[in-house]
Length: 365
Image (tube, rainbow, N blue to C red; front, side):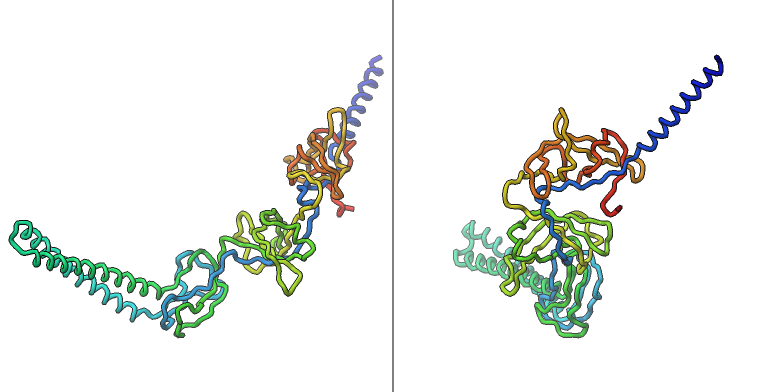
Protein backbone atom coordinates (compact mmCIF):
# COMPACT_ATOMS: atom_id res chain seq x y z
CA UNK A 1 0.00 0.00 0.00
CA UNK A 2 2.83 2.37 0.88
CA UNK A 3 4.49 1.65 -2.47
CA UNK A 4 1.23 2.50 -4.22
CA UNK A 5 1.15 5.85 -2.41
CA UNK A 6 4.73 6.59 -3.49
CA UNK A 7 3.80 5.69 -7.06
CA UNK A 8 0.82 8.11 -7.05
CA UNK A 9 3.00 10.85 -5.53
CA UNK A 10 5.64 10.34 -8.21
CA UNK A 11 3.07 10.58 -10.97
CA UNK A 12 1.70 13.83 -9.51
CA UNK A 13 5.18 15.34 -9.21
CA UNK A 14 5.98 14.32 -12.79
CA UNK A 15 2.70 15.79 -14.02
CA UNK A 16 3.35 19.02 -12.14
CA UNK A 17 6.84 19.21 -13.66
CA UNK A 18 5.48 18.63 -17.13
CA UNK A 19 2.85 21.31 -16.54
CA UNK A 20 5.49 23.81 -15.47
CA UNK A 21 7.61 22.95 -18.48
CA UNK A 22 4.64 23.38 -20.79
CA UNK A 23 3.81 26.74 -19.14
CA UNK A 24 7.39 27.89 -19.54
CA UNK A 25 7.36 26.88 -23.20
CA UNK A 26 4.12 28.78 -23.84
CA UNK A 27 5.02 31.82 -21.73
CA UNK A 28 6.61 33.82 -24.54
CA UNK A 29 4.93 33.70 -27.94
CA UNK A 30 6.35 35.39 -31.05
CA UNK A 31 3.82 37.66 -32.79
CA UNK A 32 3.71 39.97 -35.79
CA UNK A 33 2.79 43.60 -35.21
CA UNK A 34 2.27 47.00 -36.78
CA UNK A 35 2.45 50.54 -35.45
CA UNK A 36 -0.92 52.26 -35.41
CA UNK A 37 -1.00 55.30 -37.70
CA UNK A 38 -3.55 58.07 -38.13
CA UNK A 39 -5.89 58.15 -41.11
CA UNK A 40 -3.89 61.06 -42.50
CA UNK A 41 -0.89 58.74 -42.45
CA UNK A 42 -2.63 56.08 -44.52
CA UNK A 43 -0.77 57.05 -47.70
CA UNK A 44 2.77 57.67 -46.57
CA UNK A 45 5.36 59.06 -48.99
CA UNK A 46 9.07 59.59 -48.40
CA UNK A 47 11.15 62.41 -49.87
CA UNK A 48 14.78 63.37 -49.50
CA UNK A 49 15.45 66.62 -47.68
CA UNK A 50 18.28 68.86 -46.49
CA UNK A 51 18.47 70.75 -43.21
CA UNK A 52 18.79 74.50 -43.30
CA UNK A 53 18.63 77.22 -40.65
CA UNK A 54 15.23 78.80 -40.16
CA UNK A 55 17.05 82.12 -39.74
CA UNK A 56 20.01 83.13 -41.89
CA UNK A 57 21.41 86.64 -42.11
CA UNK A 58 24.11 88.38 -44.13
CA UNK A 59 25.74 90.51 -41.47
CA UNK A 60 27.13 93.87 -42.60
CA UNK A 61 28.30 97.15 -41.10
CA UNK A 62 25.93 100.12 -41.08
CA UNK A 63 28.88 102.47 -41.58
CA UNK A 64 31.89 102.31 -43.88
CA UNK A 65 35.55 101.97 -43.03
CA UNK A 66 38.63 99.77 -43.09
CA UNK A 67 38.12 96.34 -41.57
CA UNK A 68 40.38 96.22 -38.54
CA UNK A 69 39.54 92.72 -37.31
CA UNK A 70 37.49 89.69 -38.34
CA UNK A 71 37.07 87.64 -35.18
CA UNK A 72 35.46 84.53 -36.67
CA UNK A 73 36.24 81.68 -39.03
CA UNK A 74 34.03 79.51 -41.18
CA UNK A 75 32.07 77.06 -39.02
CA UNK A 76 32.50 78.94 -35.73
CA UNK A 77 29.56 78.72 -33.34
CA UNK A 78 28.84 81.97 -31.50
CA UNK A 79 26.55 83.00 -28.65
CA UNK A 80 24.31 86.01 -29.05
CA UNK A 81 26.29 89.26 -28.79
CA UNK A 82 29.71 87.75 -29.61
CA UNK A 83 32.13 89.87 -31.65
CA UNK A 84 32.09 89.09 -35.38
CA UNK A 85 34.15 91.91 -36.90
CA UNK A 86 35.29 95.49 -36.25
CA UNK A 87 36.26 98.40 -38.49
CA UNK A 88 38.68 101.24 -37.70
CA UNK A 89 36.69 103.49 -35.38
CA UNK A 90 39.18 106.39 -34.99
CA UNK A 91 37.19 108.94 -37.03
CA UNK A 92 33.89 107.91 -35.46
CA UNK A 93 35.40 108.18 -32.00
CA UNK A 94 36.58 111.73 -32.78
CA UNK A 95 33.10 112.66 -33.95
CA UNK A 96 31.60 111.23 -30.77
CA UNK A 97 34.02 113.22 -28.63
CA UNK A 98 33.15 116.41 -30.56
CA UNK A 99 29.46 115.73 -30.01
CA UNK A 100 30.08 115.16 -26.31
CA UNK A 101 31.96 118.47 -26.08
CA UNK A 102 29.12 120.22 -27.91
CA UNK A 103 26.62 118.75 -25.45
CA UNK A 104 28.60 120.04 -22.46
CA UNK A 105 28.79 123.50 -24.02
CA UNK A 106 25.05 123.45 -24.70
CA UNK A 107 24.37 122.42 -21.12
CA UNK A 108 26.37 125.42 -19.83
CA UNK A 109 24.54 127.81 -22.16
CA UNK A 110 21.20 126.33 -21.18
CA UNK A 111 21.99 126.66 -17.47
CA UNK A 112 23.04 130.32 -17.94
CA UNK A 113 19.98 131.18 -20.05
CA UNK A 114 17.67 129.47 -17.60
CA UNK A 115 19.08 131.38 -14.63
CA UNK A 116 18.80 134.67 -16.52
CA UNK A 117 15.25 133.96 -17.58
CA UNK A 118 14.14 133.04 -14.06
CA UNK A 119 15.69 136.25 -12.71
CA UNK A 120 14.06 138.43 -15.41
CA UNK A 121 10.78 136.60 -14.94
CA UNK A 122 10.79 137.44 -11.23
CA UNK A 123 11.63 141.09 -11.94
CA UNK A 124 8.93 141.28 -14.60
CA UNK A 125 6.37 139.93 -12.14
CA UNK A 126 7.22 142.87 -9.83
CA UNK A 127 7.12 145.39 -12.71
CA UNK A 128 10.88 146.05 -12.45
CA UNK A 129 11.72 145.20 -16.10
CA UNK A 130 9.93 145.84 -19.37
CA UNK A 131 8.00 143.33 -21.42
CA UNK A 132 10.66 143.57 -24.14
CA UNK A 133 13.42 142.48 -21.75
CA UNK A 134 11.27 139.61 -20.47
CA UNK A 135 10.51 138.32 -23.96
CA UNK A 136 14.16 138.64 -24.94
CA UNK A 137 15.25 136.53 -21.92
CA UNK A 138 12.57 133.94 -22.64
CA UNK A 139 13.64 133.67 -26.30
CA UNK A 140 17.24 133.14 -25.25
CA UNK A 141 16.16 130.47 -22.79
CA UNK A 142 14.06 128.65 -25.39
CA UNK A 143 16.89 128.85 -27.91
CA UNK A 144 19.34 127.40 -25.37
CA UNK A 145 16.90 124.62 -24.59
CA UNK A 146 16.54 123.78 -28.30
CA UNK A 147 20.31 123.78 -28.73
CA UNK A 148 20.60 121.41 -25.78
CA UNK A 149 18.15 118.96 -27.33
CA UNK A 150 20.00 119.20 -30.66
CA UNK A 151 23.32 118.53 -28.93
CA UNK A 152 21.85 115.47 -27.22
CA UNK A 153 20.58 114.14 -30.56
CA UNK A 154 23.95 114.76 -32.20
CA UNK A 155 25.75 112.90 -29.44
CA UNK A 156 23.34 109.99 -29.72
CA UNK A 157 23.83 109.83 -33.50
CA UNK A 158 27.62 110.02 -33.13
CA UNK A 159 27.57 107.31 -30.47
CA UNK A 160 25.44 105.12 -32.73
CA UNK A 161 27.93 105.59 -35.55
CA UNK A 162 30.71 104.57 -33.17
CA UNK A 163 28.74 101.49 -32.02
CA UNK A 164 28.10 100.51 -35.64
CA UNK A 165 31.84 99.98 -36.12
CA UNK A 166 31.47 96.73 -34.16
CA UNK A 167 29.56 93.81 -35.70
CA UNK A 168 28.09 91.25 -33.27
CA UNK A 169 26.06 88.02 -33.52
CA UNK A 170 22.33 88.81 -33.48
CA UNK A 171 21.48 85.37 -32.03
CA UNK A 172 23.12 82.04 -31.23
CA UNK A 173 24.33 80.55 -34.48
CA UNK A 174 27.14 79.46 -36.72
CA UNK A 175 29.23 81.21 -39.37
CA UNK A 176 28.21 79.80 -42.75
CA UNK A 177 30.49 81.98 -44.87
CA UNK A 178 33.13 84.72 -44.47
CA UNK A 179 32.88 87.21 -47.31
CA UNK A 180 35.56 89.80 -46.42
CA UNK A 181 39.10 90.06 -45.13
CA UNK A 182 40.96 92.28 -42.71
CA UNK A 183 42.32 95.58 -44.08
CA UNK A 184 39.68 95.65 -46.82
CA UNK A 185 37.44 98.67 -47.21
CA UNK A 186 33.90 97.82 -46.15
CA UNK A 187 31.02 99.82 -47.52
CA UNK A 188 27.77 100.18 -45.54
CA UNK A 189 25.56 97.17 -46.21
CA UNK A 190 28.31 95.07 -47.79
CA UNK A 191 28.06 91.48 -46.38
CA UNK A 192 30.90 90.48 -44.09
CA UNK A 193 29.71 87.03 -42.95
CA UNK A 194 26.68 84.80 -43.47
CA UNK A 195 25.31 83.83 -40.07
CA UNK A 196 22.91 80.91 -39.52
CA UNK A 197 20.72 80.24 -36.51
CA UNK A 198 21.21 77.03 -34.53
CA UNK A 199 18.09 77.37 -32.40
CA UNK A 200 15.65 76.69 -35.22
CA UNK A 201 16.44 74.07 -37.84
CA UNK A 202 14.12 73.28 -40.72
CA UNK A 203 14.21 70.75 -43.54
CA UNK A 204 13.65 71.66 -47.17
CA UNK A 205 12.25 69.04 -49.51
CA UNK A 206 10.42 68.99 -52.83
CA UNK A 207 7.33 67.07 -53.92
CA UNK A 208 5.87 66.45 -57.39
CA UNK A 209 2.88 68.28 -58.79
CA UNK A 210 0.70 65.18 -58.62
CA UNK A 211 0.52 65.13 -54.82
CA UNK A 212 1.08 68.74 -53.74
CA UNK A 213 -2.69 69.19 -53.24
CA UNK A 214 -2.58 66.45 -50.57
CA UNK A 215 -0.03 68.32 -48.44
CA UNK A 216 -1.07 71.27 -46.30
CA UNK A 217 0.48 73.64 -43.80
CA UNK A 218 0.40 72.28 -40.25
CA UNK A 219 0.64 68.60 -41.24
CA UNK A 220 2.71 66.44 -38.88
CA UNK A 221 5.63 64.55 -40.43
CA UNK A 222 8.61 62.44 -39.38
CA UNK A 223 12.21 63.04 -40.39
CA UNK A 224 15.12 60.60 -40.19
CA UNK A 225 18.79 61.31 -40.92
CA UNK A 226 21.34 58.83 -42.24
CA UNK A 227 23.99 60.29 -39.94
CA UNK A 228 21.76 59.73 -36.88
CA UNK A 229 20.61 56.10 -37.19
CA UNK A 230 17.76 55.06 -34.94
CA UNK A 231 16.70 58.62 -34.18
CA UNK A 232 13.42 60.04 -35.47
CA UNK A 233 12.46 63.70 -35.39
CA UNK A 234 8.92 64.98 -35.51
CA UNK A 235 8.15 68.03 -37.56
CA UNK A 236 5.40 70.15 -39.02
CA UNK A 237 4.87 71.49 -42.53
CA UNK A 238 5.46 75.23 -42.11
CA UNK A 239 5.50 76.32 -45.76
CA UNK A 240 4.14 74.93 -49.02
CA UNK A 241 5.52 76.77 -52.05
CA UNK A 242 3.27 77.61 -55.00
CA UNK A 243 5.91 75.96 -57.19
CA UNK A 244 8.44 76.95 -59.81
CA UNK A 245 7.49 77.90 -63.37
CA UNK A 246 10.56 76.07 -64.67
CA UNK A 247 10.11 72.74 -62.87
CA UNK A 248 7.12 70.50 -61.97
CA UNK A 249 8.13 70.33 -58.29
CA UNK A 250 6.95 72.19 -55.23
CA UNK A 251 9.31 73.10 -52.37
CA UNK A 252 8.01 72.19 -48.91
CA UNK A 253 9.54 73.42 -45.65
CA UNK A 254 9.41 71.27 -42.50
CA UNK A 255 9.92 72.89 -39.09
CA UNK A 256 11.67 70.44 -36.75
CA UNK A 257 10.10 70.16 -33.30
CA UNK A 258 11.93 69.62 -30.02
CA UNK A 259 15.68 69.55 -29.39
CA UNK A 260 17.83 70.10 -32.49
CA UNK A 261 21.34 70.35 -31.02
CA UNK A 262 22.51 67.29 -33.01
CA UNK A 263 21.42 68.81 -36.30
CA UNK A 264 23.60 71.00 -38.47
CA UNK A 265 22.75 72.88 -41.67
CA UNK A 266 23.38 70.76 -44.77
CA UNK A 267 22.55 67.34 -43.29
CA UNK A 268 20.56 65.05 -45.59
CA UNK A 269 17.62 62.98 -44.44
CA UNK A 270 14.30 61.40 -45.35
CA UNK A 271 10.99 63.17 -44.78
CA UNK A 272 7.97 60.92 -44.31
CA UNK A 273 4.84 62.87 -45.23
CA UNK A 274 1.37 61.39 -44.67
CA UNK A 275 -0.86 62.41 -47.57
CA UNK A 276 -4.46 63.33 -46.90
CA UNK A 277 -7.01 61.29 -48.83
CA UNK A 278 -10.11 62.31 -50.68
CA UNK A 279 -13.28 60.57 -49.72
CA UNK A 280 -14.80 59.50 -46.40
CA UNK A 281 -12.37 59.47 -43.52
CA UNK A 282 -12.90 60.08 -39.84
CA UNK A 283 -10.71 62.90 -38.46
CA UNK A 284 -8.44 61.58 -35.72
CA UNK A 285 -9.06 57.89 -36.55
CA UNK A 286 -6.33 55.26 -36.40
CA UNK A 287 -5.61 52.73 -39.14
CA UNK A 288 -4.83 49.04 -38.47
CA UNK A 289 -4.91 45.97 -40.70
CA UNK A 290 -8.13 43.95 -40.63
CA UNK A 291 -6.34 40.82 -39.29
CA UNK A 292 -5.58 42.64 -36.05
CA UNK A 293 -9.26 43.05 -35.14
CA UNK A 294 -11.21 40.39 -33.21
CA UNK A 295 -14.84 40.22 -32.07
CA UNK A 296 -16.70 38.52 -29.23
CA UNK A 297 -19.90 39.11 -27.27
CA UNK A 298 -18.31 42.17 -25.63
CA UNK A 299 -17.61 43.83 -28.98
CA UNK A 300 -14.60 44.54 -31.18
CA UNK A 301 -11.11 44.50 -29.72
CA UNK A 302 -7.41 44.32 -30.54
CA UNK A 303 -4.30 43.36 -28.62
CA UNK A 304 -1.50 45.85 -28.19
CA UNK A 305 2.00 45.02 -27.01
CA UNK A 306 3.24 46.94 -23.99
CA UNK A 307 6.77 46.85 -22.61
CA UNK A 308 7.66 44.80 -19.56
CA UNK A 309 10.70 44.98 -17.35
CA UNK A 310 12.36 42.19 -19.37
CA UNK A 311 14.43 43.12 -22.38
CA UNK A 312 12.71 42.28 -25.66
CA UNK A 313 9.62 40.92 -23.87
CA UNK A 314 6.20 42.53 -24.21
CA UNK A 315 2.80 41.91 -22.69
CA UNK A 316 -0.39 41.53 -24.71
CA UNK A 317 -3.06 43.96 -23.51
CA UNK A 318 -6.61 43.72 -24.77
CA UNK A 319 -8.13 47.03 -25.93
CA UNK A 320 -11.77 47.54 -26.81
CA UNK A 321 -12.12 49.55 -30.01
CA UNK A 322 -14.77 51.26 -32.11
CA UNK A 323 -14.58 50.67 -35.84
CA UNK A 324 -14.94 53.29 -38.58
CA UNK A 325 -14.56 53.15 -42.36
CA UNK A 326 -12.85 50.30 -44.22
CA UNK A 327 -10.16 51.78 -46.49
CA UNK A 328 -7.57 50.30 -48.88
CA UNK A 329 -4.95 50.94 -46.20
CA UNK A 330 -6.84 49.21 -43.38
CA UNK A 331 -9.73 49.61 -40.95
CA UNK A 332 -10.28 52.89 -39.15
CA UNK A 333 -10.37 52.76 -35.34
CA UNK A 334 -12.25 55.81 -34.10
CA UNK A 335 -11.87 55.03 -30.37
CA UNK A 336 -9.61 52.88 -28.24
CA UNK A 337 -6.18 53.41 -29.84
CA UNK A 338 -3.67 56.22 -30.16
CA UNK A 339 -1.10 56.77 -32.89
CA UNK A 340 2.08 54.82 -32.17
CA UNK A 341 0.43 51.90 -30.31
CA UNK A 342 2.04 48.55 -31.15
CA UNK A 343 -0.87 46.45 -32.47
CA UNK A 344 -0.47 42.66 -32.68
CA UNK A 345 -1.57 41.49 -36.13
CA UNK A 346 -1.19 37.69 -36.08
CA UNK A 347 -1.72 34.87 -33.62
CA UNK A 348 -4.67 36.64 -31.98
CA UNK A 349 -6.52 33.40 -31.18
CA UNK A 350 -3.69 32.26 -28.90
CA UNK A 351 -3.55 35.50 -26.89
CA UNK A 352 -5.13 36.58 -23.66
CA UNK A 353 -4.83 39.71 -21.58
CA UNK A 354 -1.40 39.76 -19.92
CA UNK A 355 0.26 37.05 -22.02
CA UNK A 356 3.96 37.58 -22.68
CA UNK A 357 4.99 37.92 -26.32
CA UNK A 358 8.03 38.64 -28.43
CA UNK A 359 7.73 40.94 -31.45
CA UNK A 360 8.53 39.69 -34.93
CA UNK A 361 8.71 41.50 -38.22
CA UNK A 362 8.71 40.24 -41.79
CA UNK A 363 12.48 40.70 -41.83
CA UNK A 364 12.79 37.86 -39.31
CA UNK A 365 11.78 35.37 -42.02
